[in-house]
Length: 248
Image (cartoon, rainbow, N blue to C red; front, top):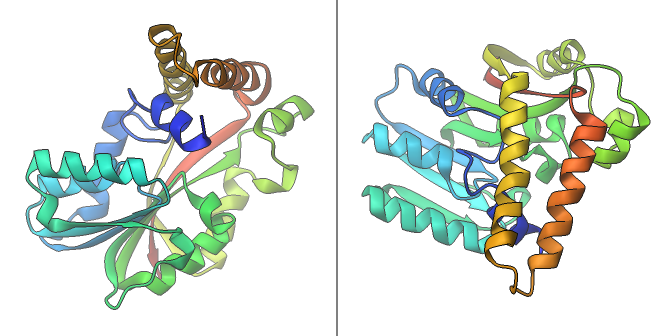
C-alpha cells in the first residue's frame, strides 16, 4: 500500500487534508472569495478537490483548476464535482504542481498543507506569484513551531529544526517576500487533536473492517507509527497557520 492510498484512507472522515475544522475552512473561503461574484481559482495539491468544490458549489460564477499527483484522488474529485453539478466548471490535472503552467492568471491560488510540493513556504510563494492575477489572493497553509522542538518531535516529523520557524518569524518571512497577510487562522489545539485522531482512527478502522486485505498490515503499521510520533513527539510543538495573502 503506497503513501497516496494510506493518505486517502486516513483523510476519509476529515473535511480536508489539513488540521482545520469545517467551520474554519468555510470562514477562510468566505474571506478569500469576498466581494468577487466570479473568477478563477487554482489549487496546487488539491487532493480530492475539497476546497475548490466547496467554492464552486456556493458560487456559480467561479471556475476552478485543481492539480495533484494522486490520480485516484482526482477521480474522486471529478465524481464529486459531477454529483454537485459543477463538473463543467472545474479542470483537474494529474501533474506535479511544480510543472503546472497556465495561459491566464488566477484570481485565487490555494496551497494548504501542500507546500512540501515546492520545497517549502518561500518557494511556494514564488510559484504562486507567477500564477496570480494582479489584485489576486493566495490562501496558503504552513507549519510553524509552537515551541522549541525536542528531538522526539523532530524524529516524529522526520524534519530538521530549520524546516519551520516560529509564527512571528514565519510571518516576517512572508512580509519580506512582498506579501501582506489580510487574514489568517492559527489551528487550535482542538483542531489538531481532532485531525490527528481522525487520521489515525480512520486508518485503523479501515484495517479492522478489512483484516484480510493485502495492505492491512501496512496500513495498521502506518496508523500506529503516526499515532506514536504525534502523541510522543510533536503534539503541542508543531503549529499550523493558514494565511490569506495579497501582493503589495
